[in-house]
Length: 298
Length: 325
Image 1 (cartoon, rainbow over the protein chains, first blue to last red):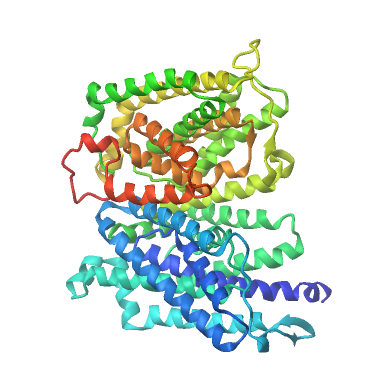
Image 2 (tube, one colour):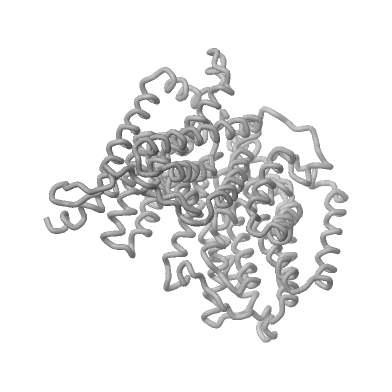
């Protein structure tokens, strides 16, 4: 019981962190699995969302919602820009697209540090959720608890939209056979634009929502990109449920793992991924290959 | 990205830029100061890394974003050897190449199973994990602070230690020329043709009985060894190694160098690396702190304007379409 008591708060933090990673990685895996675009600038979009939310936040609820709206719109617009940029490259394979997004991430990082400086920008959380609550006798920040609820809802809605609605079915169909979707009367560029827009919106929203957890700063973009990559590779590219499990696992490693043994936590992340890759390799699974095949239609 | 092998078969098209580069490399040191010379050494080390990327991305059709990982392994091998008193340059090059090859042999088993974007992502993840491991393994690597004050090397046993930027440059240049010559010779042999054939007609090669996966794994190991060689040179030039040397941006920058230089041209890759170092360290002089912006714009322009690289501008051949990327 004692161990559970000590590690309850970090474990709950891990859930919050993992959910944040899931929302952040969802946009990346969507664009990667369906659109075949490896968006290196994904972390930059996350950072942009965080900066935008931080710059409008003043502690009131209206500013918090405004911040989220601005972050989402900003992410969507940048996603649209990405769509316009990558579409002409679609018939030249994946590398030019990835290079383009890397160029955009360099430019974006430079613009962000020029505008916002190199300091971290803390977000002012609305007063009514800036306190703490008691859970099973443990003190826990209210905002994180609310974040867990909101992110869970977001994850459920996203899964529902992708799995149960016509728009989601269309996107999944585009992953399998783009030309067939085109033949059904949906212009490929529209599908691509919708995809990039949705991915950008998710990144921006995650940045705005997660700003109190991973605050916007000069290192944010790289950190989020790397953790999202790990989540996607661990959870098998294109799999929503896999990404969810992987995100929670990575979140727990980054919080619970550090609180249990700060020396070993980084190895744990490394080891988990190495094991996953090796196991997958020797099982001869074609999940990763399937991701590539899905992208090959792009 | 798709450049027919015909570009390599015309000696003139390689000879003219090659001769110009050789003259520049031989004459330039006498007109540069120490900083300029060490930048050129740095460009050569990065150039070796770029050539290793061109073996994978160009010849094998495996666009890697994690080639800085074996580069880092090579650099650390050299650093660790120096701190233990093994300062013979040739020995460091051999060991660094060997260790990086072993590293690539292990990671290659995982990476080579994937293609396209999944390969990009897997190599990127492997690279990031290598950087993380390098930062954490403090007893060996000195952690994120890196290893500094690395002892100057002696090229061969019994020779004097390289004390000036100029002498280091000549050592790096000699090593680069030797290794690039070897790579060139190998790629001009049937090995290069086999790799290109596997890249363009994988199914056909498989049905002809070629173990395509094994070829590509070997290419991955060879590229890793070459990257390790470059890493040792980088350690020699900087007398400093840190996890940053293996950063993702290094991997992506050399990929840009390869794109700029034309995917299957070792010389082009070298030139591309030089162009990038020049942009990063000279051109950005008037705009301090905005080197990344210039590089980013270079990426964007290169992607749209140079589908076949700088080498492809004058030698543009009709592009075949419809093949798998």
